[in-house]
Amino acid sequence: MSNLLNRSGAIYRQLRAGDWLIIIFSLAITLLLFQTLWTNEHASKVQVRLGDTVYGTYSLNQNRDIVIEGGIGTSVISIAQGKVRFSKSPCHNQYCVHQGWLVRAGQAAICLPNQISLELIGENKPYDSLNY
View 1 (cartoon, rainbow, N blue to C red):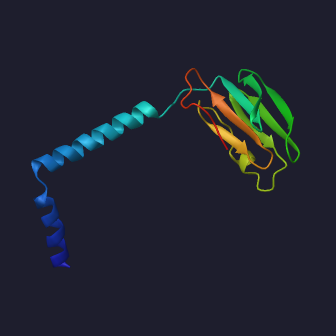
View 2: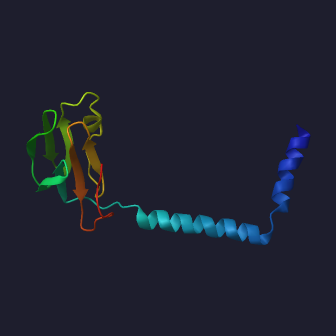
View 3: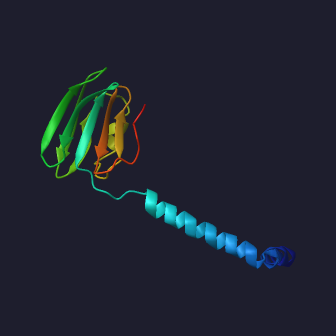
């Protein structure tokens, strides 16, 4: 056991000033990229797709249900208080319903069996497209 402790201490003694500089620089760049690329922007609209076509774009500043006939049945999308979610879907596992309320720009929920997807849109789009 003491031999193992001596070995791990030897690893830290082998790191030189340049090694520590690279570790610190890498951590700083990682934190900077995380802060820059991670969006916290609230969404203002939801884009609903049926298959590969845009079914509609709706404002999140309303309370309404959208009923859509998909490939295997009827899905209901609920918009309320700046949030959106699948409230009902005919798919077996209900993954889209369990996704819950979406609020942030760039978030998405997809019902693959019914070929319906939701994408929240803010002022700036974090990526070019949504594919499934």
